[in-house]
Image (cartoon, rainbow, N blue to C red):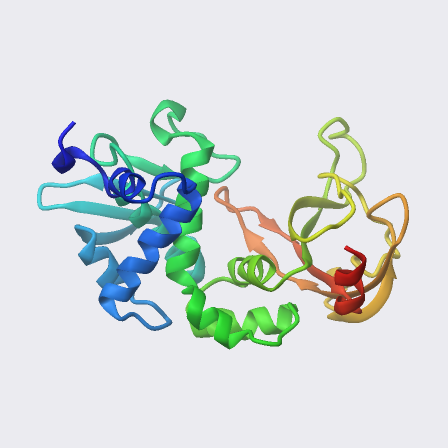
Length: 292
């Protein structure tokens, strides 16, 4: 195969054999940012134009976004009901598809977990995960984010401040904080029923976990007691406390600081979810690192 027919990712694999695709995709995003001398908040329109995207539209679509070839170039379509920060992440995700093999052959989708267009066209999870990595680098350039968070402990108030600076959602910003400024445990909880007990009374349950560092296993759909400090945000209370966190695991998670709040959202079906986000960090980071 000639080099002209290879994608940017395939060419970079040849340049630096042995490196993982995750590192290569991150490097491709950084190269683009360097070429543009981009500063946060990174201009979505400028990056899109550089990658051959001629138009970014919004529409009432059931998935978060898609990338499709048009007559004059590539077109990104974003779900109109999504908040500004989420639209930016989705758009950068679609832009990262332009570095991937075969991206011009078929429409690329960014799907919600409950939305499944044609799976044969949507691509595998590993591809979508790579595009999420690249999107995070575009949205939160490593050097700028590293400087902005130097000496900081991940908390939701900090995530809110950074989300405004970078033009991102609080969730995406907190995930980046956890990845680059851990150890930290990031949880989303919602009132819900167990998958095996849809007739039961809803309880506050873990929907997903994002973490860095060594933490006890927290199972998905794990319920927490109604009197847990993780349930207090459901009444509108903000939680910023150093505690022994109980209810998530068999034994309490000792010596941690919990930052939690209520962050409701509306899904693609128009249903509002009363979501609690919680960032958990060691109350004594240096001590935990010595024990690790």
